[in-house]
Image (cartoon, rainbow, N blue to C red; front, side, top):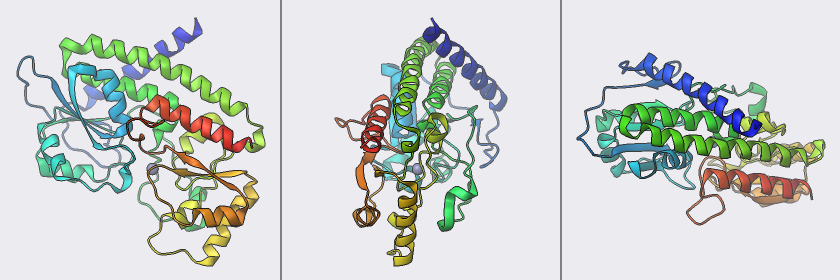
Length: 333
Ligand code: ZN
């Protein structure tokens, strides 16, 4: 009984927030890049009767959700595909046409897609712009977490909200509301698919909790090459504060021996049996660092993108299961 009620009430709550934001912002075309990045909308051109909605999703994870909710009732294009890094996206010429033709663009917001404003402007897109993280509890990035290698990034909001499965429910609900508002004849289909999926998300959320809780508390520590797992750690009780690996694995120039030594010392003091890579990055030096710290390198986690079709991470549900299975296996050894 609880399993049926919990997602329903969460869905209703997120739905109410999304509707509110949509109504609130409809017609305010200006998009303040920090505080106004909620659900902002330009008036979109009326579609011909019977024509499917043209929908663009910025990243593969959001694309997966839009596909689940929209089904065959929409035409969907995703800009940053599987294994693509949304922080460093290099637009391709076809993006321009896809955005120009789009009725709705779904984005994560929270500073993830800093390249999108320019693309939308260049394409003269009239699309509704929906920030799917609207209404979620945004996680700030604590200064301490950036560590001695802080890059002085402009945006201190953590964009990786999808790593908390309960956030995914809210984001999927936002997608269903926005699609339904733009395409009323299919609104109940969008709502019903979203409802079914949110139930699966709710089960997945509980499964992740159970899996992480199966690890001894001292083993619930994640050392990764990029700080994508803050929301995950917060939701499921995993310590991800020692992620300075990024400083030595993603820099253009080779890190100094001193930097490497500092990261190795950090891993050793964390007392973890394994460190983790991510699918959107190609870290150098990781084997050397793992060797010096006397830990294993676990298989790559899916952080900011789904895997290629046919891989263990080619949908959001699969990617979360794969990540958690990989973590539990590597950390329990
Ligand atoms: Zn990221």
